[in-house]
Length: 150
Image (tube, rainbow, N blue to C red; front, side, top):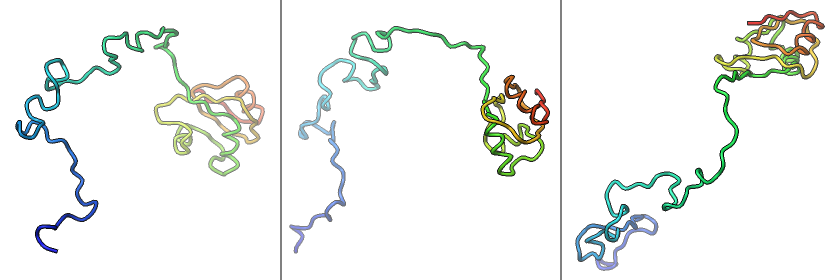
């Protein structure tokens, strides 16, 4: 081994970048591989998202349909069988309110809660929520519980 055959360890050198704009002698000077004129040769160029070279873009070719109701109120639905499983696991004993639902991650602090009627409820509970379906309300009261609308 001598100074003429030293080289870095295999895999230790990664830089394989094209060094453009470093003089004519490099072969990558002048236009720096950008060609002549046009938007792509200028600094600061970035094409619009979805641009298809002047062809009518996909988001304008595809027909639009439907609408979003800006006054829609979104409720977080919780079924009776979910409430019954909380009772079975000992999470709740006599009252179910928003703080319990937030702790068990069934609802967030800003969400509106609606109790839905799937499953059956055996426990006597005082349930507080923003809305109840007719079947859920009937099932809670049939089990001897109380319904509180917030």
